[in-house]
Amino acid sequence: MEEIARNFADFDHPDTESIAIIRGRVLQALQHYLLDRDFKQLMPILMSPITDPLNHAVYPAEIQYEERRLKLTASMIFHKQLALTAKGHDKIFIVAPNIRLEKAEIKDSENHLLEFSQFDFEIRDGDMHQVMALIEGLIKHVFSEVNQHCAAELAQLNRQLPHFTSAFPIYSSDELRAEHGDDFEKIMSASAQTPFFVTNYRREFYDRETPGKRGAYNNYDLIYPDGYGEALSGAEREFEYEQIVYRMNELSMDLQPFANYLEVARRGLLHPSAGGGLGIERLLKFICGKRRIRDVALFDRTVGTSFLF
Ligand code: ASN
Image (cartoon, rainbow, N blue to C red; front, top):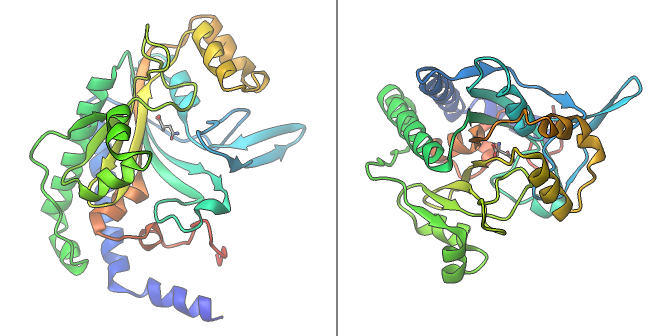
């Protein structure tokens, strides 16, 4: 009963209204920026025989429909690649809910939710430098829209949005690891003044290995400054059948559930592409100057939630 009272006290807090107004403005700015650049907006898919295997272990999130076992979407990655094969779908985006049943190890994380939303986009024939430039423009646009339209809400939240005038720096994970050790993201995020990119992570099979350079990858994360941590991850994609199978085998994956996806690749139908996904709650948390992701969502979906509602 105490928890219900606390919940409704939070609902009644003036910050809750300001955050909602900023959330709407952020979503509008994200969508406008890509619609103005001829992207097509898709609706999310919530269940499928396959979903993103992710780079870390989570509990399976599956449902039964008649005789089929379907996975709940962890990310739209494969559906983005498949959607790019549709007529006129050369640049796409989706505001997509993702379910990731994280393990208790990260229950104290201030950056994870069991369900969250991604602003997820993909460009046919895109390359990493083109996509990083797009992301930088997108983030700067969102900040300028919020600054312009949400002055009263930012004042309520006691938040002065930083101004990013210079280009976002690009580092490679090897150089940062050599300098700061394995915790480089956290260390760099704490001291940075602007968002920055980190390239070349070893992770999921679908991120493209640098052609001709085994063990190097054309992928990137965007990291917020001031200790806010990861904002986005993205990459150029593997699209060639042999290379996809090589990468899946390297990670000892079971290929069977991916049979249809692999058949599309085997027929040469997948396009080269690049894209990424921006965590909407993380962006909102940074813009609102809140330290806990819990503070920008009405309904608690943090790892330690009691699922009150
Ligand atoms: N959306 C990400 C991407 O486009 C993938 C992810 O969320 N794991 O690369």
